[in-house]
Amino acid sequence: MDLVPALVANAGTPFIWSSLFVLTLGNVIIALVESSILDRKFGCRLEASFGIMLGANFLTAGIGFVCLPWLTGIWQRLSLIDPIRAAFPTLVLAWIYTFLLTAIIEAGVLSIMSRRMGLKVHPWRASVWINLASYVCLILIAGATGRYGGALNLKSRTVWMKMTRPMPRFDLWYVKPGGRKIERMQMEPFQPGKKRVFEEFEDATWPQMDPESGDALAVVTSPTGVRYLKWLSSTPANSPTLIKRFDPAVTLERTAEVGGWKTYDPGFNGLSRTLQTEENPRFTLAPMVWPGYDFEVTDNQTGERYSFGLETPFFQWRWGNLIQLPDGWCIAEKDGRIYLVDLKLKQIGRLADGFGATAVIPGNSK
Image 1 (cartoon, rainbow, N blue to C red):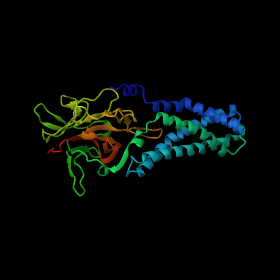
Image 2 (cartoon, rainbow, N blue to C red):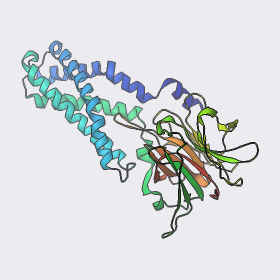
Image 3 (tube, one colour):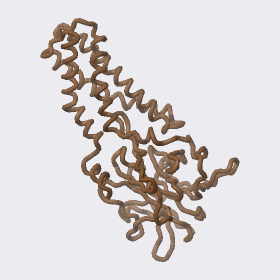
C-alpha cells in the first residue's frame, strides 16, 4: 500500500480531524473571537458575551447539522440532469446558506441578551460583523483540509455520448435500481443513429442485490473453463451464480481469485479492478473508503497525481467499484449511477442508473 493512503486509512483525513476540532475546541475559539470583537468594536463586556456566544455557536451548529443536508439534498435533486457539474454551485450555496442561518440565529440571541451584554448597536450589525470574522476562519480551514478534486478536475459531459475521445469496446453488465434485475449494455465508439444493444435478465431465485453492500458483479472461471456471472461477495456462500453463458474468449478483469471469487483488499482499500492489458499501464488508481480519497489517479508517464474525490463541510462524493479499461478509460460508481471516466482528458459522462457493474472485452458474451 502506498505510504500516504496508508496513513490516511489509519488516521482519518485532515478534513475529519478539522471537523471534530471545529465542533469541539473550535467553537470555543470562535466564541472567543466573536466576543472579543463585540468587546472592542461594540462595547460589550467580554465576561458576559463569551458564554452567550459559545451557546449560540453550538445552537447554530446543531440546527445546521439538521437543516443543511435537507437543503443540499433539494438542490442536488433539482440538478439531476448533471449532478457532477452541480457540485460547485451546491457548495457555494451551502456556504451562503450557513452564513445567513448563523447570522439570523446569532442576531436573535444578541437581541435577547443585548442588555446583559451591554450591546450598544443594532443586533443585526453586530451579528454580521462577528460572522464575517468567524466565516473567514472557517472557509480557510475547510479550504486547507477538504478535498475538491471532483469539482475542480472533472469536466462533465452530461452523458457519455458527448465525450471527446473514441471509447473502447466492451460489454457493461450492471444491476438495475431495485436490485432484482441485471442489464447488459453493449458499448462501443458512439455512432449517431446506431442503436445500443440492451438485454435484461431476471430470475426469481436471485438474491436481493444491495447497493450499500459494496459487492459487485464479476465473471469468474471454473476449473473446467466454464465462466459464470456472479454477485461478488467476500465469501463464496454469499456469491451466488447468476448467469453461466459466457464465451471463454472474452477478456475479463484481472482479479485475484480464491476458489472462484474475488478476494477483497484488506483494511481501508475499496474495490478496484482492471481490464488493462499493458505491462506498464499509464494510470494507476488508488481506491479507498474515505470520501475524498476514494478515487485518486496517478499518471505514471508524467508523475502527476490528482483526485476525483470530493470531501467538503456540507457533502461528500463516495466513489466505488472502479474498473480500469484500456487506453486510459475507467468505470466508476457514485450515488446509484455508473459513470464512464476518461482519465487522459479528465472527462466524465453518465452510463446508466444502477450499481455493481462489471465489464468484459471484446463484448461477445452470449
